[in-house]
Length: 605
Image 1 (tube, rainbow, N blue to C red):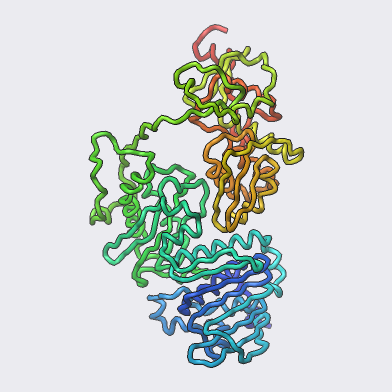
Image 2: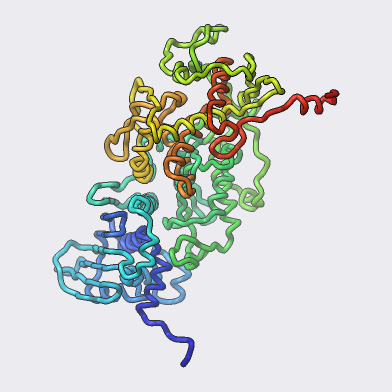
């Protein structure tokens, strides 16, 4: 008997499904792409249980006749290409003709469709790839496809699906990509019959505000460039939209969302030294290019493309973003030109020299921070208010609600720490001890203190809260809001008082007493971002959240501390169970013994 056998259609369809349909969001992606290709102006999506139980996509596109509806679920059956030459100029999102057959092979599918020329539509039932029934039905013009019980006949695949919240976050991210790529289409998304997204047609800038929050549009820089048949359109964010986690970078090629690390890097390089390693700018950019200049037929999910000249595209993106820096600097407000530079000079347009530059970035101008306008000094973060020692201190406002937030935990002064301490470069605290001297990282020290108190609070819930004088309303993107609701019970245990307040919005009434004052809304977003970066780690949720909170709420490098604040910080640090390392494992304390100092100065010991 021959060892090599031809696989059955059932097996090949399930194999194809493994490539195309990896989770509910990937099935949804294929269905929405078909809806867009059909010319739909309105697309409505209903999902249940994170898409594991049900996915339904309804559109008002051109629809299908009965015969086409049946053929649509055959493998390699498509209306989008007809011969080999069409592969060189693909103008649609779908083209392989595998998606519907793959989805139907691993789910229970119902498809309804009606064309403008028909008085009635037709409905087809398919279970596990087998057509059960085809019948006429009354319906509006367009198509509705319902996918139930995804992977019901492939248990091994089904068990690898994540929880409903995780799967729904993937779905919302997928819908955001479509909404940003096609702002002229009306999109709606419902989860368990609850509206999650309702986006009428709008200019891209307005749609960005609808998705990410009302504060985004004012921080956007428009990109509108065209050179030799290549166009780049959309928006980049100024420095106020730079975040510590990925997730707000959207790059489209002819309105198709693609994932390409090299092209993203080109955009990052365009920001030059204005962002640091580990920081990610916001952008929604659409590259318009002749379809003959790239190939999208290189990945089953069509998320990757291959360019004829990738480095040419790289340089184009980098130079366009660099050229926009005049606007970025003007909007950011944190940087100014070097003295002597012409303030009225605008960056040059793209030139042939720009186009042919190597990929290595040119030497960047040196930006120096503006001298900030005098701000009202914050009250001390540790202990009671000291008597004013200078004119500046004497001008401090009499708002001391946050001043005493560490006093309750202040411990008796340890004999091993000297009375005098010094702050070095607004980064480190130095103090004399009997055996020599210690140098303490002020941020890492406060981070360790907050971390241990937060972990303890999950068991005892003994962290006090500080009521805000004016509650803050915080608006989130759909997926961040879903994560916020998931973390809300944990945040309450460490002293936050948050309540759901409308669509994708919460109101913040109180914060932990130890948390530094300032932009509380920004800090909450930073905690969410940091938690997303830690999500895949093995630690329990409350440990990851405690680490995120302590990192973002702690005093920062660059914060000026009074002598009293430094002493109290040191005392509280040595009350910790593990004072020598921060939650990330970095050292908190460096001990320089007298013997080491004698050796450095070549003194006899």
